[in-house]
Image (cartoon, rainbow, N blue to C red; front, side, top):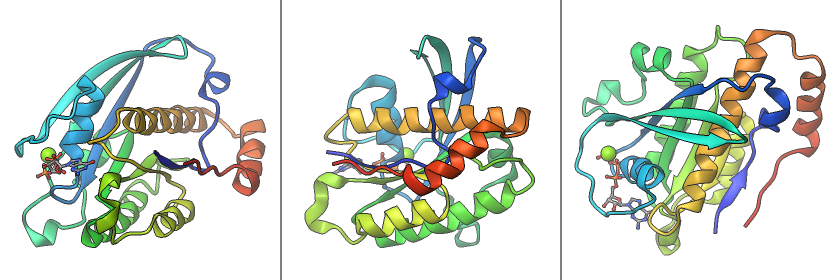
Length: 220
Ligand SMILES: Nc1nc2c(ncn2[C@@H]2O[C@H](COP(=O)(O)OP(=O)(O)OP(=O)(O)O)[C@@H](O)[C@H]2O)c(=O)[nH]1
Ligand SMILES: [Mg+2]
Protein backbone atom coordinates (compact mmCIF):
# COMPACT_ATOMS: atom_id res chain seq x y z
CA UNK A 1 0.00 0.00 0.00
CA UNK A 2 1.33 3.41 -0.95
CA UNK A 3 0.21 6.89 0.05
CA UNK A 4 0.77 9.45 -2.66
CA UNK A 5 0.47 13.20 -2.97
CA UNK A 6 1.15 14.63 -6.40
CA UNK A 7 3.15 17.84 -6.43
CA UNK A 8 1.45 20.90 -7.84
CA UNK A 9 3.81 20.87 -10.75
CA UNK A 10 3.10 17.27 -11.70
CA UNK A 11 1.35 16.72 -15.01
CA UNK A 12 1.21 14.48 -18.01
CA UNK A 13 4.77 14.52 -19.21
CA UNK A 14 3.96 13.04 -22.62
CA UNK A 15 1.78 15.98 -23.47
CA UNK A 16 4.43 18.45 -22.27
CA UNK A 17 7.33 17.12 -24.13
CA UNK A 18 7.46 17.41 -27.87
CA UNK A 19 10.87 15.88 -28.62
CA UNK A 20 11.73 12.23 -28.21
CA UNK A 21 15.49 12.50 -27.63
CA UNK A 22 17.16 10.60 -24.81
CA UNK A 23 16.57 12.37 -21.53
CA UNK A 24 19.15 12.36 -18.73
CA UNK A 25 18.00 12.93 -15.17
CA UNK A 26 20.41 13.41 -12.27
CA UNK A 27 18.66 12.33 -9.08
CA UNK A 28 20.14 13.06 -5.65
CA UNK A 29 18.95 11.03 -2.66
CA UNK A 30 19.25 12.82 0.66
CA UNK A 31 18.16 12.04 4.20
CA UNK A 32 19.37 11.03 7.64
CA UNK A 33 21.35 7.90 8.36
CA UNK A 34 19.58 4.58 8.22
CA UNK A 35 16.35 5.78 6.61
CA UNK A 36 16.71 3.53 3.56
CA UNK A 37 18.34 5.66 0.88
CA UNK A 38 20.53 2.82 -0.34
CA UNK A 39 17.72 0.30 -0.03
CA UNK A 40 15.54 2.54 -2.21
CA UNK A 41 18.30 2.98 -4.78
CA UNK A 42 19.08 -0.74 -4.96
CA UNK A 43 15.36 -1.61 -5.18
CA UNK A 44 14.98 0.74 -8.15
CA UNK A 45 18.09 -0.62 -9.87
CA UNK A 46 17.60 -4.34 -9.24
CA UNK A 47 14.00 -4.73 -7.95
CA UNK A 48 15.49 -6.48 -4.92
CA UNK A 49 15.63 -5.74 -1.21
CA UNK A 50 18.76 -7.31 0.19
CA UNK A 51 18.66 -6.00 3.78
CA UNK A 52 22.11 -4.56 4.45
CA UNK A 53 23.83 -2.05 2.24
CA UNK A 54 27.00 -0.78 3.97
CA UNK A 55 27.74 2.90 4.05
CA UNK A 56 29.14 3.71 0.67
CA UNK A 57 28.35 6.78 -1.34
CA UNK A 58 27.88 6.01 -5.04
CA UNK A 59 26.42 7.27 -8.27
CA UNK A 60 24.54 4.62 -10.26
CA UNK A 61 22.97 4.71 -13.70
CA UNK A 62 19.92 3.02 -15.11
CA UNK A 63 18.30 3.43 -18.50
CA UNK A 64 14.61 2.93 -19.09
CA UNK A 65 12.08 3.42 -21.82
CA UNK A 66 9.19 5.45 -20.40
CA UNK A 67 6.31 6.75 -22.51
CA UNK A 68 8.29 5.63 -25.57
CA UNK A 69 11.30 7.75 -24.68
CA UNK A 70 14.71 6.61 -23.47
CA UNK A 71 15.46 7.92 -20.00
CA UNK A 72 18.85 7.67 -18.36
CA UNK A 73 18.75 8.06 -14.58
CA UNK A 74 21.97 8.93 -12.75
CA UNK A 75 21.31 8.29 -9.08
CA UNK A 76 23.55 9.71 -6.37
CA UNK A 77 23.01 7.70 -3.19
CA UNK A 78 24.50 10.15 -0.68
CA UNK A 79 25.81 9.62 2.83
CA UNK A 80 24.55 11.95 5.49
CA UNK A 81 27.50 14.05 6.77
CA UNK A 82 28.75 13.08 10.23
CA UNK A 83 29.63 16.61 11.30
CA UNK A 84 26.71 18.36 12.98
CA UNK A 85 27.48 21.72 11.36
CA UNK A 86 26.94 20.09 7.98
CA UNK A 87 23.66 18.74 9.30
CA UNK A 88 21.31 20.32 6.84
CA UNK A 89 23.19 21.94 4.10
CA UNK A 90 23.58 20.40 0.78
CA UNK A 91 26.86 21.08 -0.93
CA UNK A 92 27.04 23.50 -3.81
CA UNK A 93 28.30 20.62 -5.95
CA UNK A 94 25.22 18.53 -5.13
CA UNK A 95 22.89 21.45 -5.83
CA UNK A 96 24.52 22.08 -9.18
CA UNK A 97 24.54 18.42 -10.15
CA UNK A 98 20.99 17.44 -9.30
CA UNK A 99 18.01 17.86 -11.61
CA UNK A 100 15.74 16.50 -8.90
CA UNK A 101 15.84 15.41 -5.26
CA UNK A 102 14.41 12.49 -3.33
CA UNK A 103 14.35 13.34 0.38
CA UNK A 104 13.94 10.21 2.49
CA UNK A 105 12.89 9.90 6.13
CA UNK A 106 11.74 6.97 8.20
CA UNK A 107 8.18 7.13 9.55
CA UNK A 108 9.62 5.76 12.82
CA UNK A 109 12.27 8.45 13.17
CA UNK A 110 11.03 11.95 13.88
CA UNK A 111 14.51 13.48 13.72
CA UNK A 112 14.85 12.20 10.16
CA UNK A 113 11.57 13.93 9.22
CA UNK A 114 12.75 17.19 10.82
CA UNK A 115 15.90 16.95 8.74
CA UNK A 116 13.86 16.56 5.54
CA UNK A 117 11.89 19.67 6.47
CA UNK A 118 15.14 21.64 6.77
CA UNK A 119 16.56 20.13 3.60
CA UNK A 120 13.52 21.24 1.60
CA UNK A 121 14.20 24.83 2.75
CA UNK A 122 17.87 24.49 1.95
CA UNK A 123 17.17 23.30 -1.61
CA UNK A 124 14.50 25.94 -2.20
CA UNK A 125 16.91 28.67 -1.03
CA UNK A 126 19.87 27.25 -2.94
CA UNK A 127 17.91 27.01 -6.17
CA UNK A 128 16.01 30.26 -5.67
CA UNK A 129 17.42 31.79 -8.85
CA UNK A 130 16.39 28.86 -11.04
CA UNK A 131 13.04 29.53 -12.75
CA UNK A 132 10.23 27.16 -11.79
CA UNK A 133 10.08 24.89 -8.76
CA UNK A 134 13.02 22.55 -8.24
CA UNK A 135 11.68 19.01 -8.41
CA UNK A 136 11.54 17.37 -5.00
CA UNK A 137 9.82 14.19 -3.91
CA UNK A 138 9.58 13.47 -0.18
CA UNK A 139 9.53 9.79 0.77
CA UNK A 140 8.38 8.43 4.11
CA UNK A 141 9.94 4.98 4.23
CA UNK A 142 9.47 1.90 6.45
CA UNK A 143 5.69 1.90 6.20
CA UNK A 144 5.78 -1.76 7.19
CA UNK A 145 6.77 -0.56 10.70
CA UNK A 146 3.53 1.35 11.25
CA UNK A 147 3.29 0.17 14.86
CA UNK A 148 6.44 2.22 15.57
CA UNK A 149 5.30 5.28 13.65
CA UNK A 150 6.26 8.72 15.05
CA UNK A 151 5.50 10.78 11.94
CA UNK A 152 1.90 10.85 10.76
CA UNK A 153 1.14 10.76 7.06
CA UNK A 154 -1.03 13.89 7.52
CA UNK A 155 1.94 15.86 8.82
CA UNK A 156 4.12 14.81 5.92
CA UNK A 157 1.31 15.50 3.44
CA UNK A 158 1.05 19.03 4.82
CA UNK A 159 4.78 19.58 4.41
CA UNK A 160 4.60 18.36 0.82
CA UNK A 161 1.59 20.53 -0.02
CA UNK A 162 3.06 23.65 1.57
CA UNK A 163 6.44 23.27 -0.10
CA UNK A 164 5.25 22.08 -3.53
CA UNK A 165 6.87 18.66 -3.30
CA UNK A 166 5.62 15.24 -4.28
CA UNK A 167 5.08 12.84 -1.38
CA UNK A 168 4.91 9.07 -1.05
CA UNK A 169 4.78 6.84 1.96
CA UNK A 170 6.24 3.46 1.07
CA UNK A 171 7.97 0.37 2.34
CA UNK A 172 11.08 -0.31 0.29
CA UNK A 173 11.32 -3.62 2.13
CA UNK A 174 7.87 -4.74 1.04
CA UNK A 175 7.28 -3.50 -2.49
CA UNK A 176 9.01 -2.39 -5.67
CA UNK A 177 5.90 -0.64 -6.96
CA UNK A 178 6.10 2.31 -4.54
CA UNK A 179 9.75 2.87 -5.43
CA UNK A 180 8.89 2.97 -9.11
CA UNK A 181 6.15 5.54 -8.46
CA UNK A 182 8.66 7.77 -6.64
CA UNK A 183 11.08 7.83 -9.58
CA UNK A 184 8.35 8.29 -12.16
CA UNK A 185 6.84 11.19 -10.24
CA UNK A 186 10.26 12.83 -9.98
CA UNK A 187 10.83 12.32 -13.69
CA UNK A 188 7.51 14.04 -14.44
CA UNK A 189 8.57 16.98 -12.30
CA UNK A 190 11.99 17.18 -13.96
CA UNK A 191 10.44 17.22 -17.42
CA UNK A 192 8.00 19.88 -16.32
CA UNK A 193 10.79 22.00 -14.82
CA UNK A 194 12.78 21.79 -18.06
CA UNK A 195 9.79 22.89 -20.08
CA UNK A 196 9.24 25.80 -17.67
CA UNK A 197 12.87 26.91 -18.07
CA UNK A 198 12.48 27.00 -21.83
CA UNK A 199 9.62 29.48 -22.03
CA UNK A 200 6.56 31.15 -20.58
CA UNK A 201 4.04 28.94 -18.90
CA UNK A 202 1.04 29.76 -21.12
CA UNK A 203 -1.60 27.05 -20.98
CA UNK A 204 0.59 25.00 -18.66
CA UNK A 205 0.53 27.82 -16.11
CA UNK A 206 -3.25 27.80 -16.22
CA UNK A 207 -3.36 24.01 -15.85
CA UNK A 208 -0.98 24.27 -12.90
CA UNK A 209 -3.10 26.86 -11.13
CA UNK A 210 -6.16 24.69 -11.66
CA UNK A 211 -4.38 21.66 -10.30
CA UNK A 212 -3.38 23.73 -7.26
CA UNK A 213 -7.07 23.92 -6.52
CA UNK A 214 -8.28 20.51 -7.69
CA UNK A 215 -5.35 18.32 -8.46
CA UNK A 216 -3.76 16.79 -5.39
CA UNK A 217 -4.24 13.08 -5.03
CA UNK A 218 -3.95 10.66 -2.21
CA UNK A 219 -4.47 6.98 -2.76
CA UNK A 220 -4.21 4.00 -0.48
N1 LIG B 1 11.64 -2.46 8.07
C1 LIG B 1 12.22 -1.82 7.07
N2 LIG B 1 13.56 -1.68 7.05
C2 LIG B 1 14.11 -1.01 6.01
C3 LIG B 1 13.34 -0.48 4.96
N3 LIG B 1 14.18 0.13 4.10
C4 LIG B 1 15.41 -0.03 4.59
N4 LIG B 1 15.38 -0.72 5.75
C5 LIG B 1 16.51 -1.10 6.60
O1 LIG B 1 17.04 0.07 7.20
C6 LIG B 1 18.44 -0.06 7.34
C7 LIG B 1 19.14 1.12 6.68
O2 LIG B 1 18.95 1.04 5.29
P1 LIG B 1 19.96 1.77 4.30
O3 LIG B 1 19.38 1.66 2.94
O4 LIG B 1 21.34 1.28 4.50
O5 LIG B 1 19.83 3.26 4.85
P2 LIG B 1 20.65 4.54 4.37
O6 LIG B 1 19.74 5.69 4.47
O7 LIG B 1 21.29 4.30 3.05
O8 LIG B 1 21.75 4.65 5.51
P3 LIG B 1 23.20 5.39 5.40
O9 LIG B 1 23.82 5.02 4.08
O10 LIG B 1 23.96 4.84 6.57
O11 LIG B 1 22.94 6.85 5.53
C8 LIG B 1 18.83 -1.41 6.73
O12 LIG B 1 18.93 -2.36 7.79
C9 LIG B 1 17.66 -1.75 5.84
O13 LIG B 1 17.47 -3.13 5.71
C10 LIG B 1 11.91 -0.65 5.01
O14 LIG B 1 11.14 -0.24 4.14
N5 LIG B 1 11.43 -1.32 6.09
MG1 LIG C 1 23.29 4.28 2.38
